[in-house]
Length: 365
Ligand code: NAD
Ligand code: IPM
Ligand code: MN
Image (cartoon, rainbow, N blue to C red; front, side):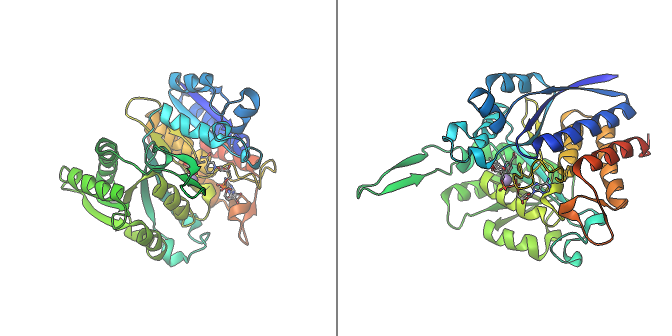
C-alpha cells in the first residue's frame, strides 16, 4: 500500500469539526483503495497565536514543506480581529500560501444536480453550471508594497495598499489557466479592471500574449463589475475564469451561491515545486462554530482535490466525490442546505454517512 503524509491544519472555528470529518472519510476511502494516509496535525491561525504567539509557527511551515500535501480547514475568529496584524490568523494563512509558493488557486463552482433547487437563484439559471475560477494567490494587493498607514500633509491619517503584478507573475497563472481550459470546454475568461487600473491593463496584455500559445482556447476579457453581474445573470456562459487575488476572492464567494452554499466550495492552491494546500473556500464560520452543524462537504471535496491534483490518487478522489453525491442523493443535508422533505443531519453525522458511502461506492476499475 502506498503511504502519503498529510499535514493537517485544523485551525479555528468550525475548522476542527470539518477537519475531523475529512480525515475520517479520507481514511475510509484510502482503505478501500489500499492507500494509507499518515496525518500530522500542526497549529495555524488563532489557535497557533494563542499557543505560540504567531499564527504560522516555523514548525508548522516545516511540517508542511516535508509533507506530500497540506489539508487546511479554516482560520479566523472575532477574538483575534483586534490583535496586531502579524498575530492575526489571516496573516498565518497568507504566510503559508507564500511560504509554499502556492500561486495558483483553483476554485471550481459546480452545481450538482441534487442541489439545483438549493440555490437562492432560479433552478433554470443555475443548473448545469460548471465553472473553474483560477485565482492568483500570492501577489496583487494582498502582498504589494508599500502598504501601511501614515499621515498626509494636512495631518489626516491615511491607509494604503498597492496592487502590483509583474509580467512573470501574470504569465505563470495564465499558463495554468489556459492548460486547465484545454482540459475543459476550451473557453477562458480573464477578469480585470483594465478600464481603470494600470495593473489590470498589464494583466490583460500579458494574458492576451500568452493566449497566442493556446490557439485552441477561446480567450475573452471582462471587467470585474460586469463579471460579477454575468455570474448571476447567466453562469453557464462561463467555463474557466482567471483573475487576480482580490477579484478572485470576491467572485468565488459569489459563485458559491450558485451551488447552494458556501459550504460546498472546495479549492486547491498549487505551486510548481512544493506541496499544494487544499482548503475550502469558506472561512471559520465563527457564528456556527462548536455546534456541530457546519457543512463538511467543501472540506471533503477539498480532500478530493488533494487526492486528484496533489497526490495523483484519482480513485480515492472519485470515492470522496461519489460519497458526497450519494449523501445528497439520499436527502441528507446540513442546516445551510436544508429544505422541506430533506433529512437534516449534524456535521459529525454526515461524516459517518460519507465514511460509509466511501466503501459502498462502486468504482469502475
Ligand atoms: P465565513 O466563510 O467563515 O462565513 C460566512 C457565512 O457562511 C457565515 O454565515 C457562516 O456560518 C457560513 N458558512 C461558512 N462555511 C460554512 C459551512 N461549512 N457550513 C455552513 N455554513 C458555513 O466568512 P466570514 O464570516 O466573513 O469570516 C469568518 C472568519 O473566517 C474571519 O476571521 C475570516 O478572516 C476567516 N476566513 C478564513 C478563510 C480561510 O481560512 N480560508 C476564508 C474566509 C474567511
Ligand atoms: C479565502 C479567505 C482569505 C483570502 C482570507 C482569510 C485571508 O477569504 O481564502 O478566500 O482572502 O484569501
Ligand atoms: Mn475569501
